[in-house]
Image: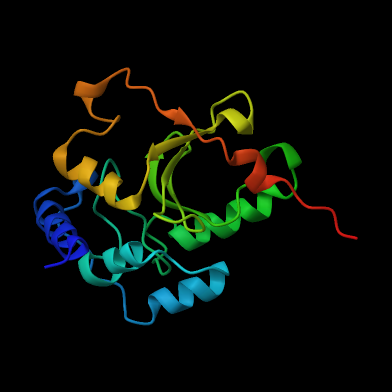
Length: 188
């Protein structure tokens, strides 16, 4: 069994027994074409592990705090999807050059108070970032939550994330790539 297969098995077990914020069961896994439709809407590929979470575990509804957002489809009674959040934030951030949303950084989980866990889909190993919009400026609103999506999932499984009550005061490292990922290159 590969490391990803082992991790998916552990996530499946934890997800089946740990329903965030009153969910009584997991949603069904995403339909097979959901990932390709999401990638077409986003304009970039999803990391393999993230796609596997949606296709093999459930279309959101598991993970830390409120759990993963649905990937693409959602009914009017459900929360927004990861794709809708990304496209919305990329759209409104273009109106305010000081608060640009980085390309390829997909919000996957809502923490409340406007905070999101996001996967950097354009960087190898897919780091998970924390977006904290209550900062004084956008450059100080981004932190590295985990060096990779696999690490983020293992932290959730082990109950050792910064969001756990036992880790109160745990400091996260600022995300140094914010400026380089949001600076628009001038067109000739």
